[in-house]
Image 1 (tube, rainbow, N blue to C red):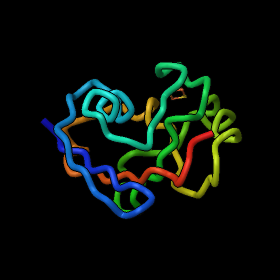
Image 2: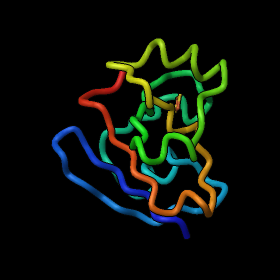
Image 3: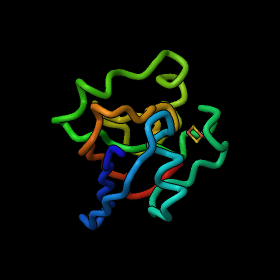
Length: 106
Ligand code: FES
């Protein structure tokens, strides 16, 4: 199972096992990782699952689709590698993925 590391705004790091086909958001919620709220449950309609993809992983993870891009406008402190974690599907080649959670959501 691909490991995903979440680093919070204070620099605290948590690594959990993700399931292929699940999302980075679902994996965080399932494992009690703080910093991701996911109010809409993964429908790309709330922007409270915002994360920053680590630079080294940005290319592998890819760019947001237009719908996600529009929703990201509502996220707090958007940066070049910002993504909505409910839209990042976990694949085997994302083993070791690192994402950072923002200081706050929404
Ligand atoms: S959970 Fe709402 S946009 Fe990702």
